[in-house]
Every structure is written in structure tokens, then in C-alpha cells.
Amino acid sequence: MLKIQNLHKSYSTPQGPLPVLQGIDLNVARGSSLALMGESGSGKSTLLHLIAGLDQADSGSIQVAGQDLGQLSESQLAGWRRSGIGLIFQQFNLISSLSVADNLAFQARLAGRHDRHWQAELTQRLGLTQLLERYPEQLSGGQQQRVALGRALAARPALVLADEPTGSLDEASSNEVLQLLLELLDEQATTLLMVTHSPRVAARLQRRVTLSNGRLAPADGL
Image (tube, rainbow, N blue to C red; front, side, top):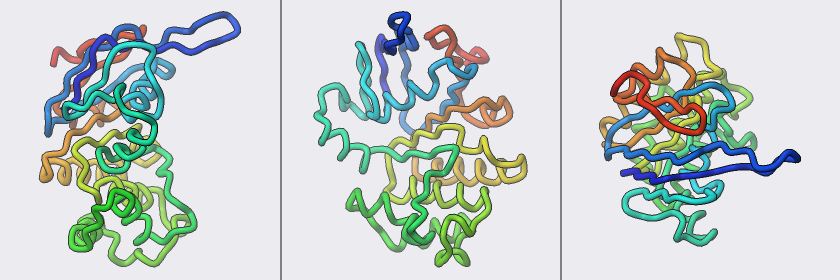
């Protein structure tokens, strides 16, 4: 599903180029889950942004379902982000002016894949049925993250990228949200790449790798 080869990325600083990723190689099978770990500033979010097509690598390649992202134009990348992937962020990134129902449908409508039956099932599974007319500011953190999950999954993407999706939640809410996410992804055979600092969260995923000094290594021999 995801194939990364010899990926390099650096940023310009007054002191010169700052290498962040130095020859990343990674393969993630379709329908599997991978936790990406590492210290703050190690480049985890940078790697996620490159995979999402939100930034460009200096060299190397990223292929998702056989599509080389480096060969896509900006407009093609934008279209691919709408339909090919689901993004989940630590800070939810819900649209404050939209109701829960409209936030849930937002991504699927952009992708041209809005399915009211699937959205109704997601709404029920995520425990949001009684909250559809509320707005993000009227929800708890756990409820907002459930909406974010539903939005990301509503278009049935083949790949979900999650950046610390439970990092701002208490442990109980984190466990509930993570369990729902893994169940829904497993049923849809959706691939998951999750950035997390939490060994407890990472242990729930099938594989774990650590990013350190710009390179990847297995976190636990897997």
C-alpha cells in the first residue's frame, strides 16, 4: 500500500541546511497498521506530511497504491488528498462553523463519495447520534476526536494518516477512541500509519518503528 524509498528532507536555517530525514525506506502492507515513534523533533510529522503530499521531499520516492506522489501536479495532489487518504490530527481540526453532521460529511462530499447510509452507520458506531446538530465548541475533546475519525473514514480512504490522534485525550477517552478507530479500519481493510509518543498506543498496532537521527529502525524487532 505504501512504499517509501531513500527519502531525504532537509530545511534551510541561518546556519545552513538542517537534515531531518536521511534515507528513509519503509513498506506498509495494505490493511496493516504501523506506529511511527521517536522523540519530539525527530521528523515524524515531517514524514507524515510528505506522505500526505503536504510537503515535498528533496529526493527519494513515495508510492501509495502504486501511485508515485512525486509525479503528481499540485492540483492532482489536492485531488488525491481529497479521495485517497484520510487525515486525523491531535487538535481535531474540525470546521467550527459547521455542525457535527456537516463536519462528518465534509471530506466525503469533497471526494464525491458521500454515502448517507455509511455516514449513518459511522455516526451510530461513534456514539454521535445525539450530537449531530451541535457545533465543535459544544463538544468534549473525546467527542471532537470521534467526529474527526468519522470525517476521515466517511470517504472510505485506502490509507489513514494519524498524527497523535489521542495525544490530547485522557486515558479513558484515548482507549475508547483508539478501539473504535482500529475496529472500523479493520472492517474496511484500511491501512493505518500513526505517529504516537505513547508505547501503550503503539502496542495496539501491528508494527512499530522508531525514527531517530533521520533514519528508521524497528522499535521492537517487528
